[in-house]
Image (cartoon, rainbow, N blue to C red; front, side, top):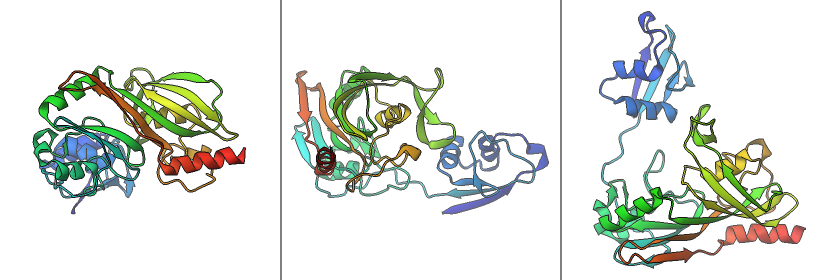
Length: 309
């Protein structure tokens, strides 16, 4: 870990923190510095600040620079739950607790590393740190993911995702009772201005359009079992949309806030599962569909809720 200690002088007062740092640490790109600021590796007088913070003369700025991750992902021989595999695509059922690709604080134990060990030829497909990955699931969300094994499949699947023709259906348990049997949440999503590690519903023009279709499957006194379909694929979309409607996903410590209710049974991860996935096969051009049953952790929660009513 490289550590830097800098002091703001009077002529620089009023500059943005990221610009001020970029001028004084020229060997680190501004984009990299912004990422360090967002991840809390930059402190001003001991406190994390935003990149837009205007520096004040006399402030002490401390920067922790972690070593850069290796450019090439190391394969890890970890068992995969394979739903379907052919020479172009791999569909896996990801358990909760597994990160899809390396990121801050998650250098090892990723799904991408396991896929690379399973199919070494995928190394040149997509990015070097996320070979074959065309979409992702949060660490604590379980369910179906499609991996592109060839450049043909990667191009086809990313195009289908951009065109919103990939069908993704989730099953979830949310807090509170949703009253409408069917709802469409159409609210822009962007970075939370108060916490850059979170996403939030943003005013028009300040986020990317995000659309989630919600259908109630079963109601309980304090929870609702529902189906959610993505029309768009924004980061944390279902979690943010339901939380903004006052119904955060059960087990969500990030977006549950003060509304978070205690659960009748322990829940490993979020009560959110990617249960169905459909797309046009890149080679055959035939639409294929895959399903994954609810994992025991969510099934157990529903069983307790049903017996308690």
